[in-house]
Length: 597
Image 1 (cartoon, rainbow, N blue to C red):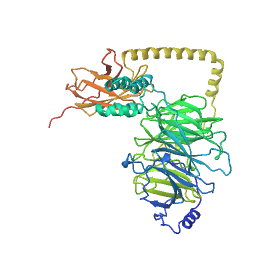
Image 2: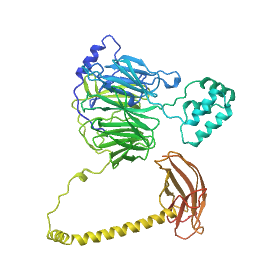
Image 3: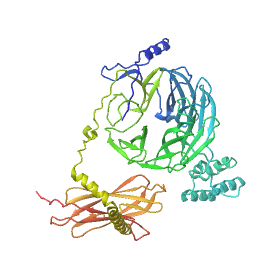
């Protein structure tokens, strides 16, 4: 997956670190493997760092030509609600400075806020519902997300509670009905009130909060930077922020005003940004519903959508290609239009991904690095004065730094068993024959008649296709059921040799319009009772949550001695309707004879 680029040797960097740490305890350094392409610069497995990839940044904070490592450390999250989150800045391998954070961070981005010389970037830390700006490692500015709209019914309930015109039970009933309706999102205060079961505690809660202003703010889930008016590395930047309320904001870093707001169909978890805001830009939003949405300048709605078979754990962009790692240990390559180039299943689950620019531009596995612990976060780039450095954070809080050798050469070995290289070789086109020339002349002379016949056949084919599709929809035979707000996909599998089979029916709610679950469904089967016996032949479906595939099993027994087979029809129905939503026809295999020994 990695596309990697060459580097310089690490002798200068090791010499610089040695000079800076003469009077300090030297870090633990692993022994170099002569066959490895990486130099073990630093390995400290007791550093106690707990973070993710989005909370790591490599940036020259002081315009000295030496890049610093910035990490937003979560601390020990088991000690909640006592937070130990800190913003740590490393110079070389030693800790330079740390700042306390008020909430758990989700992203750290280095951005340029002005045009002053020398070009010193600021650190933007997304935490909770705010973005904290640090300049020269000092708190500089705090940007808070705009408040969300609150339902008028909820406002009236808390207003009556302030005036003393409503009792606790009536207040609980109104808020609970509003929550169950699912049309609006309640504030955090109302959710906490609904969770209290004791009347005395609920009364104390209302008395404590009724005089405070009712507010509703979203939380930041991801953040990236976007160049404002130039493609230069030190150009002015904008902040691109994804929020829990399914919005993407573009924030100007000078005046901290919202330049654009985009509506995302689901909550974004990862962002990938390219381009320039004043010219043209693209934003890839990987969301929790298993989709990747593409946004462009001037359009608040997504232009394209890519459906993933599993939830994404990481996304990287290489030119016009998108590399996505998923929770099912699969690695995918897509175009921005949604076409999938290839897919590979990795031998273990993906815990971290990062981009390494190098010469190979295909799907070859070029190198494997052995680490003593599982890696949970990675960052590749320039560190100190080295151009090719890989920083890794392990599961138990270890800090591992490796430097790519200057003489490293990555060979394109097709370890992932993709298509053979011969497939990429161009075929020699033969010379034109007399038959080809005669056919070309015929097409030129009779082009009008051929086009008319083609159009007639095409229209006839479309008409027949439309009629058959209408019949399948009316009979519920379409493998994908669609209504105005609901979409259900069905898939059936038969396991076994017979005479006893296991029939598995898989259902998935793939609706992209409504995220509400589908309820009140059941499975029903029709079959020839002289050939098969099903147990059970009626299956209750309690709920279908969006994006999750559910499997329902039924056992089929072939009760005839003849070597024949038949079909079994599966229907997904609603309790309040006589017409099935969706159905599937299963061609059963011929059962093996029951041999008694």
